[in-house]
Length: 290
Image (tube, rainbow, N blue to C red; front, side, top):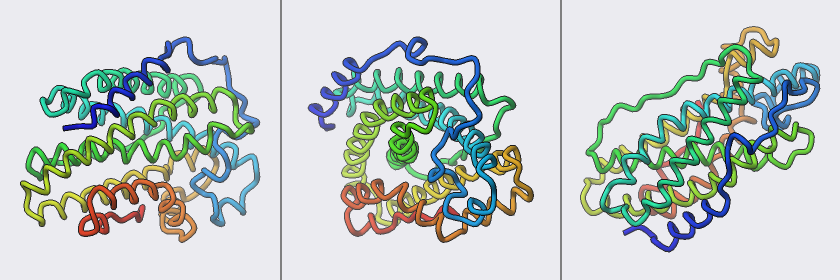
């Protein structure tokens, strides 16, 4: 059974923090391009020679493009991952969480709307983002565990950006507000995700072979790597004025300074996995980004 006390608390929290998404934000006719939209230390070039060799205006342009890329990634990633919640919420073993899952679905729809609206208003030409389609190769119960795990891994990554951007007064208030609003909702989603994943994992250890479980955890490591690689968008580099953008992307992904950032983004997730999966399987989770 799931933690009904937790899910009741999360449902009450969502009710208390509910909002009308179309009235929540002060949309402007245009957003200043003279300021950063993403803090310098969150740019994909941070800590590398690319950051120190270009001027401040180029970095500002990159911050605009990477904000658009990040928000587009959130829209497309959450729209796919939302299907998992719609499947889980009607299953008998999670019936006690139905009320909160209903909030979850509503909030994710709101997130997709305000991220897409930001991109529509200020993004110009569509920013290409690749979404990885994982072909099912596991028993249904294992696949459900992987699907819910991908959700909170993806949202933990997004929240890492949210908490670092939402209080940075160098950014436009609208950008900070979006990060702040997303963080408030995601805190609940992540807590629910870990609870459901733990419940699923405990069942799997009783029914599945060790080699199947090990393969599933390796699959999650691949998902983490894919998520990190999506932060390096060659089209964003091109629009900011960089040359040889595909070579640049690969250099950045492999830069030792960026590997430290990769590890930091998923440090909380790895610790939680180690607790849920135990030492035998928790140690399999790796973060490379390349």
